[in-house]
Length: 298
Ligand code: MG
Image (cartoon, rainbow, N blue to C red; front, side, top):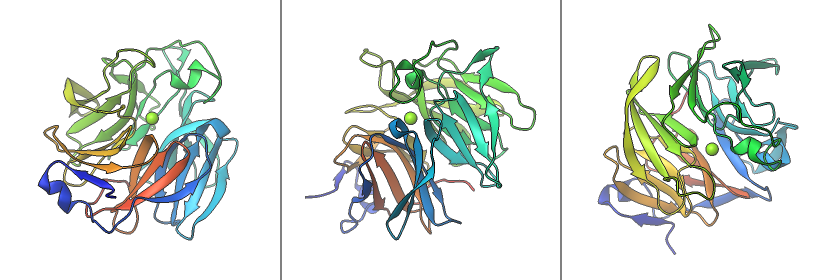
């Protein structure tokens, strides 16, 4: 069996026929938010329903990094390498300082609590961009069931000034997000309201310093929905999907698929050359080594 489906010959150069989609760890309930720490030689990821962040190392050691995690979901690192986390439970985005303490980046907008920050990216100017759909407050499974008080939007937080501004407000439920390599574009996945006819698409926006403009359709994922997304150094976008990970060219064409046996939630690049793709998928974490490099900070 092949781990890959090739729709454009260029994708055949991105994958290697003898590089497996390997299960690294399993036994979780809903894994999300993979983030690579090259300096520590480990991958962190969330096991959201079990209220913990896990740590995997290449010698196959899996330990608990933080529990309780306030039902953390997506993570990234800022330009100083610090962990930035979305928390459903406290309805906030935090930064983990080098001494282990947590700094709240954002927890309210318009005087009302955020919904349940889901995924996050940091721009090269240090600003923190995150999505705030309502999934984490719909039930008690991934946090605490609560009333939604703010719309489902994407925010830009300035950690220097504390300013929090809405940058994307034309989606049903914004989820994963990624900048293009030169940060001229912002991609945002919309997973829509559950059990609705909302489109399962990715939209792309022109980045205009502190905001975005000219939002337009980029790609519709099939089957399933785009949750986590990441760009590679050539400007392709890699997206989670129901059958695995899809690689989409910058013009929106599907180039190929990495087939994964569980529903994929999110992905990140890591490893020595940023050429390893880590995949969180329902109960397990998988990895496939690619002939492609991810865009990743720091
Ligand atoms: Mg997500």
